[in-house]
Length: 161
Image (tube, rainbow, N blue to C red; front, side, top):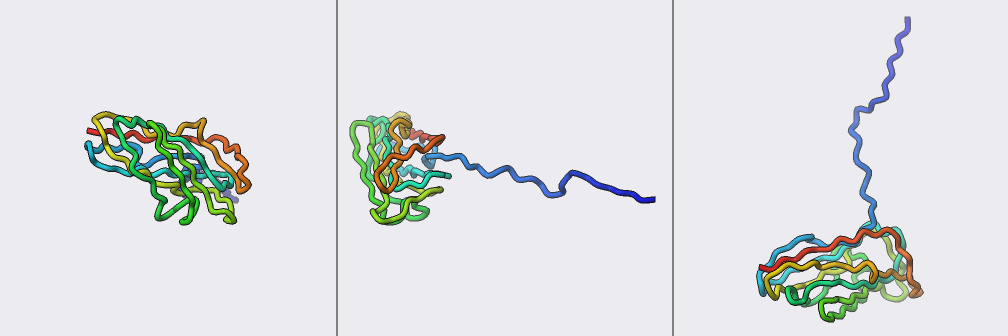
């Protein structure tokens, strides 16, 4: 007599699939500060599948509640590298931001920190700090716009007390 046992169940637990969502987000997502106090919001990109050379974007916020102080490149995990070129113009509750590799460097993809925004509380209230989707643009090394698809954009909320 021959007995054959077989089964379809594995003894090892299954892990959820890795999150491969292309995302542009701020950390922390929610922050509370006092009037006159400063905070930093870091802008990260995750899982960008297209190779890019530059990015331009617009960030909307309420400048009666927050003041923009400065922007700095990331010290580690910098998406565009330590020698990235950055430009920021603050105009009435809108930050216009452009970040780029230096000419001659290769395009990049994947995940990393784009930059960090220093903000100061002006008056009590709450405001979103958000990238406007229609003003988010990616470019290749020849200056041509790249149609990056399906990028999830997450804003941050800053409350001033």
